[in-house]
Length: 239
Ligand code: NDP
Image (cartoon, rainbow, N blue to C red; front, top):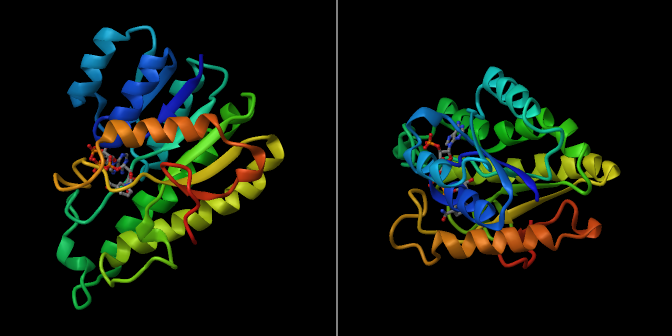
């Protein structure tokens, strides 16, 4: 029985990952900004009362990260998997999508994306590192994007989203070099173009397929893959 922490677990891929880990019999700490109104998580808790813990966590709020760490540390002495899933895309939050076009770019908008998509996941990993180190071969899975690949980049927009995922890649690659010495494996995963609030209705991939692939690859990781960037099917993504 594994113990899993998932950020942004109230909807989209995070919710689907939560559902599938629960179905496997694992224990999930499902973190979200507003757990009180996370209706899908409440339904899952009715079904999996002994396996599911709802945790308040806003990745941009350091007090919230610390409070979440204390809550989880009060419930478990180890974490086997951290899924840094929470993220934001232009139009998916209060950020103005027009500010990701050349001519409308602002520093404030850039910093919002960097905070949620790059700095937040790094601080979450830092906060939960002691619990991860206490497990045998823990994994840190950070949801990146092909948009964060310098090799694949062929369009301008979305400027800040793409740059934030490239920054996430660097942060997590740096982290991997350190946590590898404790036996922790940290990888970046492009989940594909997934049918979620972020991916939209025309996306190719059902969340269930992407989540299943991410869980499978998490189970099959080897030490030599620490610090790698792969698709949900385990194929390497060029930096
Ligand atoms: P959704 O937009 O459907 O869900 C995003 C989740 O992140 C929500 O739970 C949201 O919470 C949460 N979130 C946003 N900001 C914060 C914050 N400050 N603190 C905590 N949680 C926050 O996205 P997806 O499920 O599609 O995406 C999951 C991950 O996969 C993201 O990192 C995304 O960048 C990546 N990805 C997705 C792709 C796709 O096609 N869907 C493609 C490539 C990458 P709330 O409900 O409170 O807003």
